[in-house]
Length: 250
Ligand SMILES: [Zn+2]
Image (cartoon, rainbow, N blue to C red):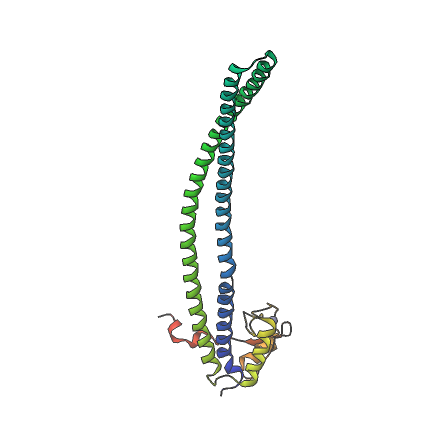
């Protein structure tokens, strides 16, 4: 096993893998909420449509009841008109006459009311039809969105599994000291962030504090693990770019 400092690139790969897993897992965990939100929107549309249906039902019931009342009154009027032909006294005649007149008034009112109900029923019927069409379209879109969300979730799940495999491979590669791994695990469990900070210029790549020149010099030796005095992360200095022959200008 190489010295602890030389193990840092592998540890950085592990922490990048873990960061990917965390990020993908967060996305994956948001799916139930997103799905639920879609279902709630659909339920809301359905409720609006059902409320309209109920409104129509109430109007239809009222229409039947008033029509029946109108027919009953008409029957009564006919009956009283027949009785009127047979009465003996003026008082009886007047009483029937009053009754008929009262029923006729009531019928005039009922006829107006029935006409209004019919107009309102037409309006509600039309609104219901429009809402039903809208709901059907919405339901189709909902099914599509759900299917797409589920596909996306499956894809994410596969990606998470791939990164977890990669993590396992890195963990078991034997390139990482068990003590260092223990420290890494404890850190990531507690802080859920990277343990190794790559030096950026002369600053800590994580907390951005300026590092002392002696510290940078020590890092150039690539021997011991050095931690940032400010954020306690292990510092890592990238090897010089010129070490890569392909980056040399031709
Ligand atoms: Zn730092």
